[in-house]
Length: 135
Image 1: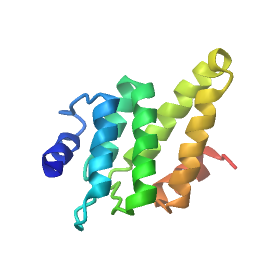
Image 2: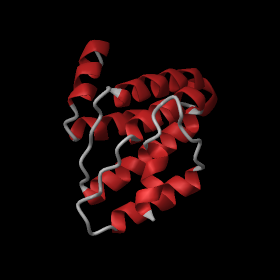
Image 3: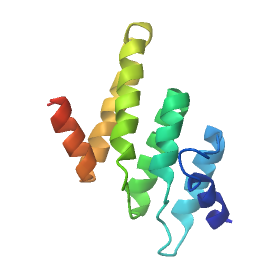
């Protein structure tokens, strides 16, 4: 079952499937329960990047769900095309637009997600942050 769910994320950015957040949360709960070495979720960063361009709220909540999963399951993380920095860029842009309306709540969530990604040692995140000159 979880292999079929993982295929939803592996469609590529052009052919992505819009997935409701409750399905994403349940999927990651299922992935975390797996006892196999197949805990990697190939295609998730690319799917997340596509979502960040369409629905930043869904993308942020999905990223937070993914990071919770990563902290528990220690999966293999592959971001070969650098989608995660692109996701952060989109999320930061939207958070800055929302800052006055939500008193910076989204911005705090994005910064928290960025910090978690940095702590995972994903090179693309560090490089992106250095290029953006953010402390």
